[in-house]
Image (cartoon, rainbow, N blue to C red; front, top):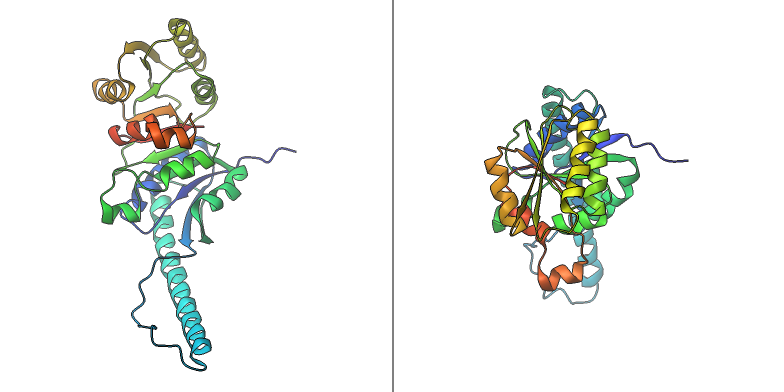
Amino acid sequence: MAIKEEKVLACVDRSQFAEHVTDYGAWAAQRIGLPLELLHVIDRHPEVARDTDHSGAIGIGAQEQLLNTLSDSDEARSRSAREQGRVFLNALRERAEAAGARQTDTRQRLGELQSTLSEQEALVSLFVLGRRGRSAEATQRDLGRNVERVVRALRKPILTVTDQFKEPRRALIAFDGGSMTRRGVEMIAGSKLFRGLPMQLVMSGKPARDAEKQLEWAKTTLEAAGYEAESAIIPGDAERIIAEELIAREADILIMGAYGHSFMRALFMGSKTSDLLRSARVPTLLLR
């Protein structure tokens, strides 16, 4: 028996980006008509600098005393993190409910983000994830260290967000004619998430032989579902073209396939998905 998809899951950490993730999660949950869950994962092995120097604690009985001390310290830190997380999640729940999310729940887990999301995936219709997180506040990275790893591990759509919430009014689909984006078009046609938003279909990069036929199929599929759709083939570098078209067409949300190649290939040749996420300044729905 298939497990019913029953929630929008927004992943938040204790950073300035958590409010943006919550706002977009509330928006998506209302559009789809599903409950919203706010998930905060506490790292099981935080990198915490210890104030006490234990280098000389090697005498008789010192090892056992040291282990007890460290255990007590870890437990106290864990209790403090859980309590701070509870207060943090309650504030975000109030924010989501004020934004109109009808059913909002919170969940706090001790562990690792990727495995926690994989465990929840069967019950999730849509993930919402910040493109940056707490670690990026210190490093100033334009793409969080967890994004690619998490996206590659999941198979459900993932809405990655950046800045403050702005209700999407026009969407752009980076359509390449592949199976991933074709399934994405069918998913959009059957979903309430973007219902009523004008759709812009753009093919870029090296055009396929049957590009016009593929693009016409996508446009017709969306129009049959009631969407207003426009399409264009624009040869050239995909990252540059899509970034420019987002601005030119005044699109405020991007839809695209994600990480179609292996991690090893991306390691040596770079990832077009990551490049486009860096250049696109709008929320992006990643299709897997």
